[in-house]
Length: 241
Image 1 (cartoon, rainbow, N blue to C red):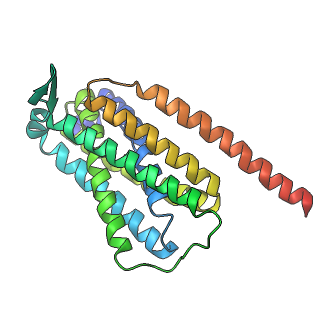
Image 2: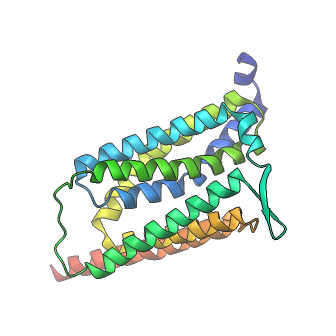
Image 3: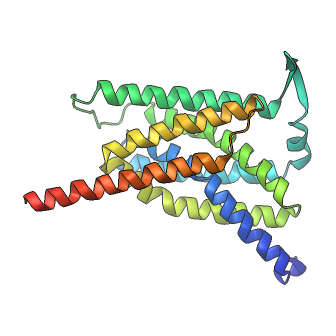
Protein backbone atom coordinates (compact mmCIF):
# COMPACT_ATOMS: atom_id res chain seq x y z
CA UNK A 1 0.00 0.00 0.00
CA UNK A 2 2.82 2.42 0.86
CA UNK A 3 4.41 1.59 -2.48
CA UNK A 4 1.23 2.75 -4.23
CA UNK A 5 1.25 6.07 -2.34
CA UNK A 6 4.80 6.86 -3.47
CA UNK A 7 4.47 5.56 -7.04
CA UNK A 8 3.99 8.22 -9.77
CA UNK A 9 2.54 5.53 -12.03
CA UNK A 10 -0.08 4.66 -9.41
CA UNK A 11 -1.09 8.32 -9.00
CA UNK A 12 -1.27 8.77 -12.78
CA UNK A 13 -3.45 5.66 -13.06
CA UNK A 14 -5.68 6.90 -10.22
CA UNK A 15 -6.20 10.34 -11.80
CA UNK A 16 -6.84 8.88 -15.26
CA UNK A 17 -9.28 6.26 -14.00
CA UNK A 18 -11.08 8.77 -11.73
CA UNK A 19 -11.58 11.14 -14.67
CA UNK A 20 -12.89 8.27 -16.80
CA UNK A 21 -15.25 7.09 -14.05
CA UNK A 22 -16.63 10.64 -13.68
CA UNK A 23 -17.24 10.84 -17.44
CA UNK A 24 -18.94 7.43 -17.45
CA UNK A 25 -20.98 8.57 -14.43
CA UNK A 26 -22.54 11.42 -16.44
CA UNK A 27 -25.13 8.92 -17.70
CA UNK A 28 -26.03 8.03 -14.13
CA UNK A 29 -26.34 11.67 -13.05
CA UNK A 30 -28.63 12.46 -16.01
CA UNK A 31 -30.85 9.49 -15.20
CA UNK A 32 -31.02 10.40 -11.49
CA UNK A 33 -31.85 14.03 -12.29
CA UNK A 34 -34.71 13.05 -14.58
CA UNK A 35 -36.13 10.26 -12.44
CA UNK A 36 -36.34 12.34 -9.23
CA UNK A 37 -37.80 15.43 -10.92
CA UNK A 38 -41.36 14.16 -10.46
CA UNK A 39 -41.30 13.82 -6.66
CA UNK A 40 -41.13 16.42 -3.84
CA UNK A 41 -37.73 18.02 -3.21
CA UNK A 42 -37.17 16.36 0.18
CA UNK A 43 -37.80 12.91 -1.28
CA UNK A 44 -35.76 13.76 -4.38
CA UNK A 45 -32.70 14.55 -2.27
CA UNK A 46 -33.08 11.29 -0.34
CA UNK A 47 -33.53 9.34 -3.60
CA UNK A 48 -30.33 10.87 -5.04
CA UNK A 49 -28.42 9.97 -1.88
CA UNK A 50 -29.72 6.39 -1.94
CA UNK A 51 -29.10 6.08 -5.68
CA UNK A 52 -25.49 7.25 -5.54
CA UNK A 53 -24.79 5.19 -2.42
CA UNK A 54 -26.10 2.13 -4.28
CA UNK A 55 -23.95 3.04 -7.29
CA UNK A 56 -20.89 3.06 -5.04
CA UNK A 57 -21.85 -0.25 -3.41
CA UNK A 58 -22.47 -1.95 -6.77
CA UNK A 59 -19.15 -0.74 -8.18
CA UNK A 60 -17.13 -1.92 -5.16
CA UNK A 61 -18.95 -5.29 -5.09
CA UNK A 62 -18.30 -5.82 -8.78
CA UNK A 63 -14.65 -4.84 -8.35
CA UNK A 64 -14.36 -7.41 -5.58
CA UNK A 65 -15.75 -10.12 -7.88
CA UNK A 66 -13.28 -9.71 -10.73
CA UNK A 67 -13.12 -13.38 -11.65
CA UNK A 68 -16.90 -13.64 -11.87
CA UNK A 69 -17.12 -10.37 -13.79
CA UNK A 70 -14.53 -11.46 -16.37
CA UNK A 71 -16.46 -14.71 -16.78
CA UNK A 72 -19.56 -12.70 -17.73
CA UNK A 73 -17.97 -11.96 -21.12
CA UNK A 74 -18.01 -15.65 -22.06
CA UNK A 75 -20.71 -16.71 -24.53
CA UNK A 76 -23.95 -18.08 -23.06
CA UNK A 77 -25.77 -18.71 -26.36
CA UNK A 78 -25.41 -17.86 -30.05
CA UNK A 79 -28.03 -16.49 -32.45
CA UNK A 80 -27.24 -16.35 -36.20
CA UNK A 81 -23.51 -16.33 -35.56
CA UNK A 82 -23.65 -13.66 -32.83
CA UNK A 83 -22.53 -14.89 -29.39
CA UNK A 84 -24.24 -13.30 -26.38
CA UNK A 85 -22.72 -13.22 -22.89
CA UNK A 86 -24.42 -12.26 -19.62
CA UNK A 87 -22.78 -8.84 -19.98
CA UNK A 88 -24.41 -8.42 -23.41
CA UNK A 89 -27.78 -9.50 -22.03
CA UNK A 90 -27.54 -7.00 -19.16
CA UNK A 91 -26.50 -4.19 -21.52
CA UNK A 92 -29.35 -4.94 -23.94
CA UNK A 93 -31.89 -5.18 -21.11
CA UNK A 94 -30.64 -1.99 -19.48
CA UNK A 95 -30.59 -0.13 -22.79
CA UNK A 96 -34.16 -1.17 -23.61
CA UNK A 97 -35.21 -0.12 -20.09
CA UNK A 98 -33.65 3.33 -20.62
CA UNK A 99 -35.29 3.75 -24.03
CA UNK A 100 -38.71 2.68 -22.68
CA UNK A 101 -38.43 4.86 -19.57
CA UNK A 102 -37.27 7.94 -21.49
CA UNK A 103 -39.95 7.47 -24.16
CA UNK A 104 -42.65 7.15 -21.48
CA UNK A 105 -41.41 10.32 -19.74
CA UNK A 106 -41.31 12.23 -23.04
CA UNK A 107 -44.88 11.12 -23.79
CA UNK A 108 -45.98 12.23 -20.30
CA UNK A 109 -44.29 15.62 -20.69
CA UNK A 110 -45.86 16.25 -24.11
CA UNK A 111 -49.37 15.06 -23.22
CA UNK A 112 -49.51 16.75 -19.80
CA UNK A 113 -47.98 20.06 -20.81
CA UNK A 114 -51.23 21.94 -20.38
CA UNK A 115 -52.37 20.14 -17.24
CA UNK A 116 -51.58 20.87 -13.62
CA UNK A 117 -48.99 18.56 -12.14
CA UNK A 118 -49.81 16.87 -8.87
CA UNK A 119 -46.84 17.48 -6.58
CA UNK A 120 -48.30 15.47 -3.71
CA UNK A 121 -46.29 12.32 -3.00
CA UNK A 122 -48.06 9.22 -4.29
CA UNK A 123 -48.04 5.95 -2.37
CA UNK A 124 -45.28 3.70 -3.59
CA UNK A 125 -43.80 6.34 -5.93
CA UNK A 126 -40.61 6.71 -3.89
CA UNK A 127 -40.14 2.93 -3.69
CA UNK A 128 -40.65 2.56 -7.47
CA UNK A 129 -38.06 5.27 -8.14
CA UNK A 130 -35.53 3.47 -5.91
CA UNK A 131 -36.20 0.22 -7.81
CA UNK A 132 -35.54 1.97 -11.14
CA UNK A 133 -32.34 3.52 -9.74
CA UNK A 134 -31.14 0.07 -8.60
CA UNK A 135 -31.77 -1.42 -12.06
CA UNK A 136 -29.95 1.31 -13.94
CA UNK A 137 -27.12 1.48 -11.37
CA UNK A 138 -26.40 -2.19 -12.07
CA UNK A 139 -26.17 -1.54 -15.80
CA UNK A 140 -23.98 1.56 -15.53
CA UNK A 141 -21.80 -0.07 -12.85
CA UNK A 142 -21.13 -3.07 -15.07
CA UNK A 143 -20.00 -0.94 -18.01
CA UNK A 144 -17.91 1.31 -15.76
CA UNK A 145 -16.14 -1.50 -13.91
CA UNK A 146 -15.33 -3.48 -17.06
CA UNK A 147 -13.62 -0.30 -18.33
CA UNK A 148 -11.73 0.03 -15.04
CA UNK A 149 -10.53 -3.57 -15.21
CA UNK A 150 -9.22 -2.96 -18.71
CA UNK A 151 -7.23 0.09 -17.61
CA UNK A 152 -5.79 -0.79 -14.19
CA UNK A 153 -4.77 -4.08 -12.60
CA UNK A 154 -4.49 -2.93 -8.96
CA UNK A 155 -7.75 -3.37 -6.99
CA UNK A 156 -6.86 -0.65 -4.45
CA UNK A 157 -6.45 1.95 -7.22
CA UNK A 158 -9.75 0.92 -8.82
CA UNK A 159 -11.67 1.15 -5.53
CA UNK A 160 -10.09 4.55 -4.70
CA UNK A 161 -11.00 5.89 -8.16
CA UNK A 162 -14.58 4.64 -7.86
CA UNK A 163 -15.03 6.22 -4.41
CA UNK A 164 -13.63 9.59 -5.56
CA UNK A 165 -15.79 9.52 -8.71
CA UNK A 166 -18.95 8.75 -6.68
CA UNK A 167 -18.19 11.66 -4.32
CA UNK A 168 -17.83 13.99 -7.32
CA UNK A 169 -21.06 12.60 -8.79
CA UNK A 170 -22.84 13.23 -5.47
CA UNK A 171 -21.62 16.84 -5.38
CA UNK A 172 -22.76 17.39 -8.98
CA UNK A 173 -26.10 15.57 -8.77
CA UNK A 174 -27.84 18.23 -6.65
CA UNK A 175 -27.10 21.24 -8.90
CA UNK A 176 -27.86 19.20 -12.03
CA UNK A 177 -31.18 17.98 -10.61
CA UNK A 178 -32.18 21.53 -9.53
CA UNK A 179 -31.28 22.93 -12.95
CA UNK A 180 -33.37 20.25 -14.70
CA UNK A 181 -36.32 20.92 -12.35
CA UNK A 182 -36.14 24.70 -12.87
CA UNK A 183 -35.85 24.54 -16.66
CA UNK A 184 -38.44 22.19 -18.23
CA UNK A 185 -36.80 22.25 -21.67
CA UNK A 186 -33.60 20.80 -20.21
CA UNK A 187 -35.59 17.83 -18.92
CA UNK A 188 -36.71 17.05 -22.48
CA UNK A 189 -33.09 17.33 -23.62
CA UNK A 190 -31.98 15.02 -20.79
CA UNK A 191 -34.63 12.48 -21.80
CA UNK A 192 -33.33 12.61 -25.38
CA UNK A 193 -29.84 11.90 -23.96
CA UNK A 194 -31.21 8.85 -22.16
CA UNK A 195 -32.66 7.51 -25.42
CA UNK A 196 -29.26 8.03 -27.07
CA UNK A 197 -27.45 6.27 -24.22
CA UNK A 198 -29.99 3.43 -24.28
CA UNK A 199 -29.42 2.90 -28.00
CA UNK A 200 -25.64 2.82 -27.39
CA UNK A 201 -26.05 0.17 -24.66
CA UNK A 202 -28.24 -2.01 -26.88
CA UNK A 203 -25.74 -1.63 -29.74
CA UNK A 204 -22.92 -2.72 -27.41
CA UNK A 205 -24.93 -5.77 -26.44
CA UNK A 206 -25.25 -6.68 -30.14
CA UNK A 207 -21.45 -6.26 -30.63
CA UNK A 208 -21.79 -2.94 -32.47
CA UNK A 209 -19.73 -0.48 -30.45
CA UNK A 210 -20.56 3.21 -30.84
CA UNK A 211 -17.50 5.23 -29.73
CA UNK A 212 -18.46 7.06 -26.54
CA UNK A 213 -16.60 10.14 -27.72
CA UNK A 214 -19.31 10.74 -30.33
CA UNK A 215 -22.06 10.41 -27.73
CA UNK A 216 -20.37 12.68 -25.17
CA UNK A 217 -19.65 15.27 -27.87
CA UNK A 218 -23.32 15.25 -28.91
CA UNK A 219 -24.38 15.62 -25.26
CA UNK A 220 -21.88 18.43 -24.61
CA UNK A 221 -22.83 20.30 -27.80
CA UNK A 222 -26.58 20.01 -27.14
CA UNK A 223 -26.11 21.03 -23.49
CA UNK A 224 -24.11 24.10 -24.56
CA UNK A 225 -26.87 25.13 -27.01
CA UNK A 226 -29.50 24.66 -24.29
CA UNK A 227 -27.40 26.70 -21.85
CA UNK A 228 -27.35 29.59 -24.35
CA UNK A 229 -31.15 29.27 -24.70
CA UNK A 230 -31.56 29.43 -20.91
CA UNK A 231 -29.32 32.51 -20.70
CA UNK A 232 -31.20 34.16 -23.60
CA UNK A 233 -34.59 33.55 -21.91
CA UNK A 234 -33.26 34.94 -18.63
CA UNK A 235 -31.94 38.07 -20.34
CA UNK A 236 -35.26 38.61 -22.16
CA UNK A 237 -37.11 38.39 -18.82
CA UNK A 238 -34.76 40.95 -17.30
CA UNK A 239 -35.25 43.28 -20.28
CA UNK A 240 -39.05 43.06 -19.94
CA UNK A 241 -38.94 43.77 -16.21
